[in-house]
Image (cartoon, rainbow, N blue to C red; front, side, top):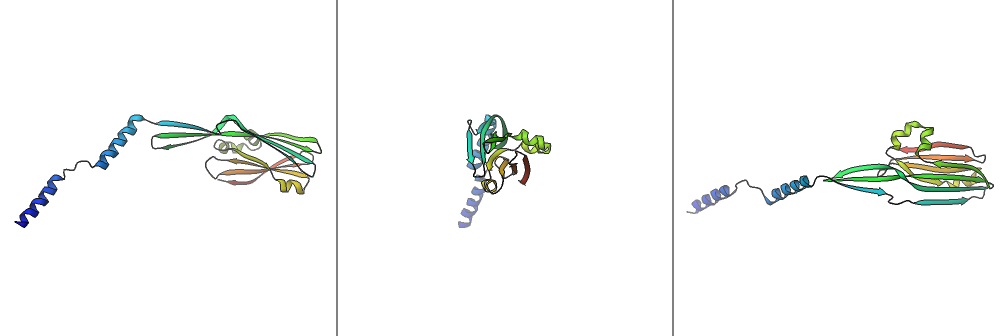
Length: 187
């Protein structure tokens, strides 16, 4: 009799497994149908959201005065697009422009706008890189500028949301001669 009950329970267990969907499978199917029904959603974000401007005035003991004005270029940006589930994220990183004015003994020796076009005039091979990168910083190298009769300014372009960068040094001598050389590039 015991054996008969065991056999009956085993048969009943096999018969009750009809291969139907589990709750997990049903939920997964439902979520997929929902995703298909709503289509793709796009979220756009601009970085920075609004115009910004920074002005740095530096007076050095060797007779130089350096003014660096950096501001947001509201017309040009670099797009970083990625998709997560059904959402397409579009992050627009606005370009920056820097205006450098240098005085030596109160006489203006340099007035230069620094942006992508300034570097493309010098090296057109940077065109592809500048489509995915933007100007991220322009700053005075005070240590080098104090020691000698020259000004050293770092100019860096970066690819947004990565560690890729292109760093240059702009050297301006006491006569206003400008020299630019690449320091490093990380790709």
